[in-house]
Image 1 (tube, helix red, strand yellow):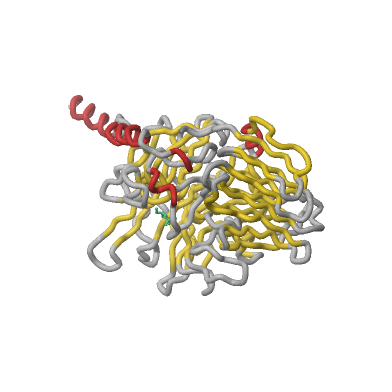
Image 2: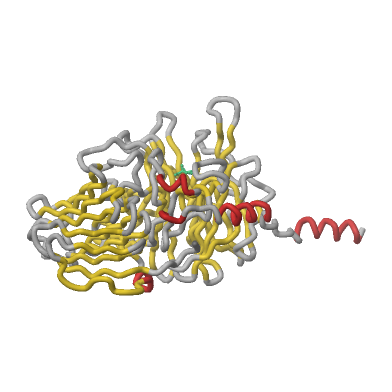
Length: 480
Ligand code: FRU
């Protein structure tokens, strides 16, 4: 009897953590050595090898930030999804960790993480392909870790098997805790193809109760809402999500899919979210999608996939593809979210490359990494050209005081948006080996675009007058 009891106890309670897949990690190390580093980013999280899309499981556990990501190690294009993993004490200096989730019968699609009972718990979408229409189904799985490195999938998966209306599109759970309950928002669509977000709650993260449709397109907001996120700032609630396939309207919604937010109020008694402001894009660049946020130290921090579906990834021939943006702090100003580089970004400044007037026609050249702060009175036209010393892609950053729009022209593919500075009239521009992020003023307007230069960065003032520039070389803060 004692033996039977001990065996039972052992199977129930002594769950041996799933070992890291040593074969996969050895493969990653071997392949890493073959990567051509020319475009590899120096202070953005990128996959060690292979493909990366959405950030997942952004969380703070045992004194470290964790970021996971959609990962396919075996090719630099999308494939059966794993969760790659990196950790950092400060959101700037990153360490690569072993692959956290590997696909079994399911592909490990996007999801989130939360700390519960001293464990880091992942809640993610299991995507399973089938032979019959609609050819896949999606449900929500859990995985647990005691140490933040080894993850074990829950034996009782799925914990959320199917959407209330049976929609096969039921993915990207974002979990948070409020009072005694865990809540989750999940992306989905209506039977007539309108994007929507579903809200659930649970007393234990195992059994979930459907509460409400938190938000839904009335017709012009895309056919599917991916990667929802829901959080409070200044007593108001923000529904952040990535609608697929909104039609362009003027300067807006120019990418294949969008990421943006709705500001409103939420009531934990009725579970109703009342939108107060229409959907607004959060970043106007060419390559930005599938955001995720977390809160720590009272700050709401955002990260996104620095990429867009169905666009070329010139780095793919080098053995890797896809990146994360730099981390940004969100501030609600009136009805708008401002997005600023986190304060710790200044710790990357290694050397001042320029400080003073940047005359018409003058050039700044520097290899791989630069942060530029461009200041002017905005009463004259600005035209800053960014390209490689041996050519390659070219970005023109422009301002016209008559039109009052910031223009990012990447090889003729234009993104532009009106800008009224709240206070600062500066542009803060981050260049990494193949990327450009432009933050205007306090973060009223932000553009994130990948750009592939040949040779060193070459920044030229093509404005009809001088501007003031401070430029820093930034140090490497992610693994090679
Ligand atoms: C968003 C997305 C998610 C999905 C994941 C698959 O970019 O399509 O909805 O979970 O990527 O990799």
